[in-house]
Length: 64
Image (cartoon, rainbow, N blue to C red; front, side, top):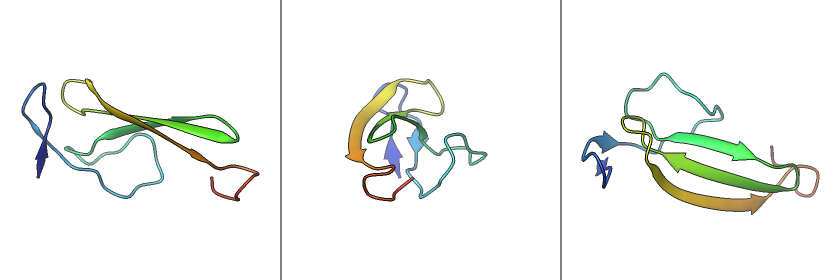
């Protein structure tokens, strides 16, 4: 299992369609945007930002 570089607690990146989850160690994922989706991943324990990403979605590609 991966560890947060800030608090050293274990974290997991699981496939989910929700931005908040009940899984204890799952990384939080926040998504914004209509065409260009921007994603921010944060630690579920200390809320430190772990990374960013983006993809083209919405009406352009049919992805949510």
